[in-house]
Length: 301
Image (tube, rainbow, N blue to C red; front, top):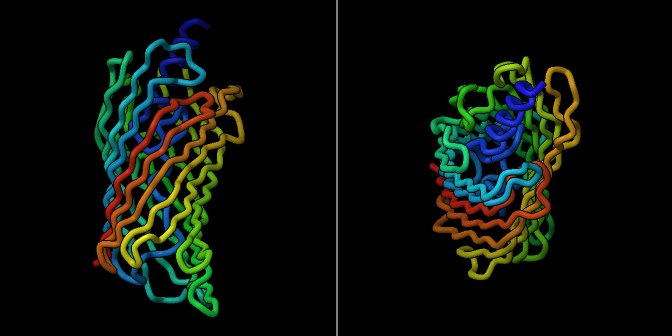
């Protein structure tokens, strides 16, 4: 029993410090704070988009684990390609494809065994609906994506920290932007997360199956320089809905966190956009609690 408990704690620690956007105990890499303002549609219509994200996460608290003076620093580069077609699949909805490859760098203590490298590949076909129009312009943009997370990232059961999760996940979402008057917008992206089993979790563990969860990003922006600069607030949440399974047994280690902070968008021109977002986490349960900073550059080719 002692060896099983030791192995389980190591797995918890390793997953909790996952070098990934999620930085979660047992959960895979998910979108916490990467997207924010004007998320309901592409900024420049159909075509090919290249997006580069750089996110820095730092935490000195591991909620739910008795570890003194923890330090976690994770830097993530997301490399994204989006193709938005101009072809209707159903009336008013046009297909698209989203592909993301993360690269992860970790620095943490007290665990010395860490790893860096490529994270899990995200692939998502989606439908982008045409704008809902009003008398003075667009009222709403929205999209549904069937996002999948494939276990292609670097993973070693002997390492405490890994870029990859070593299991498949299905993480569909609905994203929308609502135009509230001529200068104010509100946006959200809501995901539902389902996880498959990790059957290579460590000694004494046949498998771990992370619980299902829902998570999302939200933001509100005010245009302060016409067609050039928006500022606002942005945030995210993660809420695990079912318990994690270990060798068929249910483990009550459900994860939760909430974060909020300031942000801005610089519309360089119609085809180039720069986002800057900062977040302060609170109310964490069974996961790290810290701060997150995201820089995102969108280029429409």
